[in-house]
Amino acid sequence: MRRKSLLSERYGVVNRLRVTRKFWPWLLPVVWSSLLLVALDRMVHGEWARALLVLRLMFSPRQWSA
View 1 (cartoon, rainbow, N blue to C red):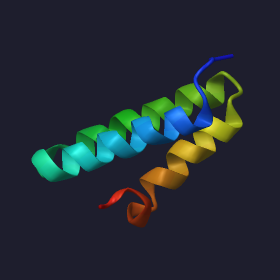
View 2 (cartoon, helix red, strand yellow; view 1 turned 30 degrees about the horizontal axis):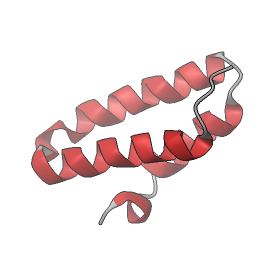
View 3 (spheres, helix red, strand yellow; view 1 turned 30 degrees about the vertical axis):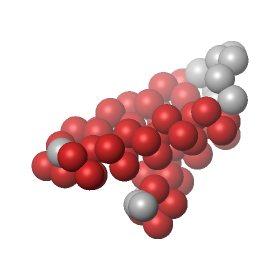
């Protein structure tokens, strides 16, 4: 089990999306692909809450667009 908190996971995902969208919007598909791999990794390790959080943030742009 990872020691990183869910809040830390949330900020990590949101910051990846925000920075990419602001400075390198053409790379958003690459970041989305990497986040899908992150979610799959969380599922493989039985970290369902983390996987759901990553997927929820990916598909809720209101939560990460500022």
